[in-house]
Image 1 (cartoon, rainbow, N blue to C red):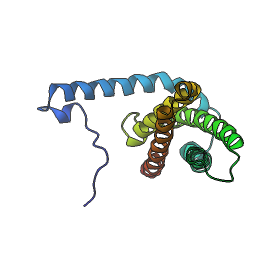
Image 2: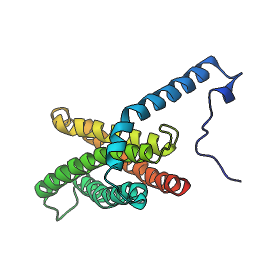
Image 3: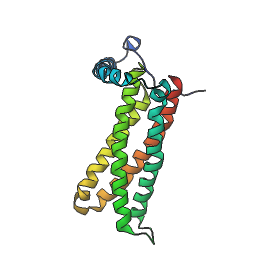
Image 4: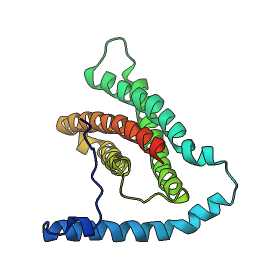
Length: 190
């Protein structure tokens, strides 16, 4: 028996359900329509470059796969080496590399998020309907929060914030792996 990860329903199909559910569905539908209208001119501009459909369709997953699987796993690995104080490790060098790599990874994920949304608009696929959109939004939010914790110098070196940083980063990586799987599923469906 297949389990649906996401149940996309129109406002009309949820009549008889709670008023809050109907209002939320209407809000998301309206937001999706407005966001698509806002991004359509940008997507049309990019479409004017004459990119092959294959690149429009699979360019985002290919680039983001590299970012998540190469940069992300390396940053997470380095972060846990720092956290656990692995012997024989130059902690200062590892900290410096982790900080740079995590910052660039987050930057590329932010750019990729934008590119992915534009790719959906270029392919006339509705926004906000796929779990891939929502896992990407959540992962980017967690990475931003983690960056803020790091930039605060962990609240002045508080051990609890260092621990929080390590676990938020790990949760973000797990979400990004789920996000990648959902992205492949989405790519194969459109």
